[in-house]
Image (cartoon, rainbow, N blue to C red; front, top):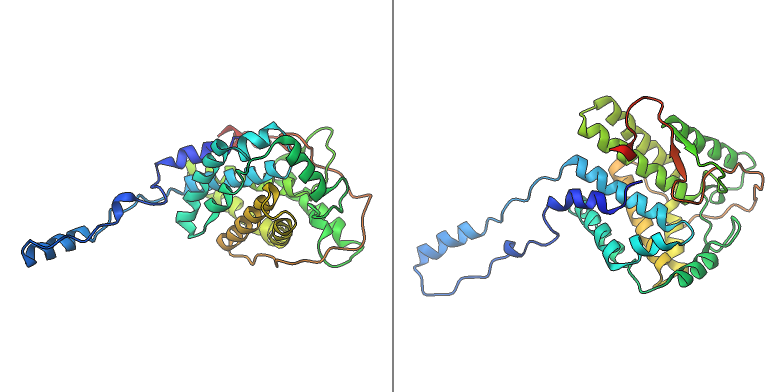
Length: 306
């Protein structure tokens, strides 16, 4: 998958969050009233900002989904470099700022909170404390752990997730040791869909654009948008001031914004945990850099190739 800095580099031609030249100080006295009035009328018109290209927005959205997918994996050197360093966070914040200008959100502030001084050992200890070594840590990162108790609903949700992945030419990594409903798998799937959306926009492929848009909408409505806000808020409460707490806030806020863009209702901020555990749930995603592996079936380049 491309790094989060790539979409932000493409979008760097968009105006910055604040335009220093857009604010004008009042002129002093000493000029004719008519002259001051003409000057005021002229200077009150701020330069028009260039329109944000839909392709740039799609790439920036992909960058944030990819960052979330990385952040919720077991910490590695890549986590520090791309998410917990000033340089990596700065590049991601640039992408978030592009979305903030388009949506009126404040995602860039959430991103900047990730750059807290830390090291790999501290992150690993926090990861173990918060997520544990089973499905039921302090903050379960699995979709099917949330919701009303049901014998069959979790398995139906798992099956639906796997069908989504297959429909877009995705197969699970060989030797995988995670479930399809892990937060990382679902975020990485949306990163792939956003890359496909950018690819379709670049090539003016209306059919692909519509298919991708509908898939994003339904996936948010039926899966990630339903439970990720509660997951993110709980994580923020469990790790206040920490890296994962900041990541949880970013997750909750970004998913909520994405739901608004898709025209679906975001899930509640509080969801109950299911009491039953399904130890025989199918395992699907892998722990490394490619939890979801693209298997091209149409002959077109995958989003990773664009």
